[in-house]
Length: 122
Image (cartoon, rainbow, N blue to C red; front, top):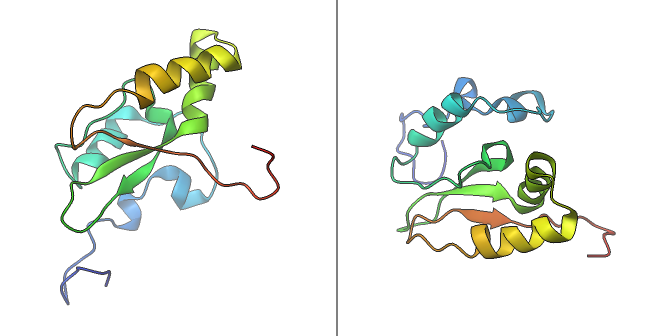
């Protein structure tokens, strides 16, 4: 049972619904976008997605009394811009900050996570 779950109530997220990366512990190069959208809609159909960054989805963030939000790996979004659009790191980072991170679409706007990595200089 998880916090907020009633006794006897199944978790909304079974092992079958867990994204493939979490099941195996490995990262896959491509995410099935239809499967991802189906998995996300089980949480909240009003969540907004950042188009073109499906491969950077980490999961869903939940807070008491607030809408569920899709969470993206910010560094992976920048990497996608570099690989997909042929940008260098600086151009991709600037584009990401202005056009993606800077795009407020209301209370369902996705979150972008900067991962803490011990020993990193940045």
